[in-house]
Image (tube, rainbow, N blue to C red; front, side, top):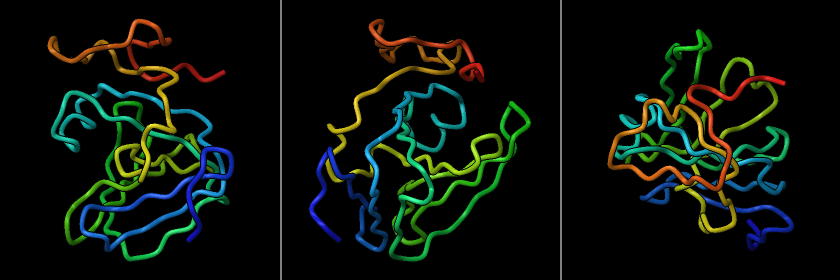
Length: 143
């Protein structure tokens, strides 16, 4: 793997080092999600997700999968490390051709500033929602 840079892509991985990945694309968008599923998976008030094209993603290591139907009716296939259980990325119906990387798994999460917030109607009272980025009460409306 090469050094990660904001202009050429980025790298990341899990807590134990079993999983490593590289993106050959800059982040397309980074979203803070306050939905119940993201809170449960992350053990915190919200999750940050960074979207990249799937053809710009390279993975080293074996991931485990968990597939669940979202409130939208779409299936989400979450991938995580089978050893340390770190959330790494997911794919979902309705977002074909894209990989949604868990921003906290990036080697340098500072390169992925949030662009928007979703499911803010589900946010916990104590979790900060940045008023300087667009937000949606549920999932962002498709354009």
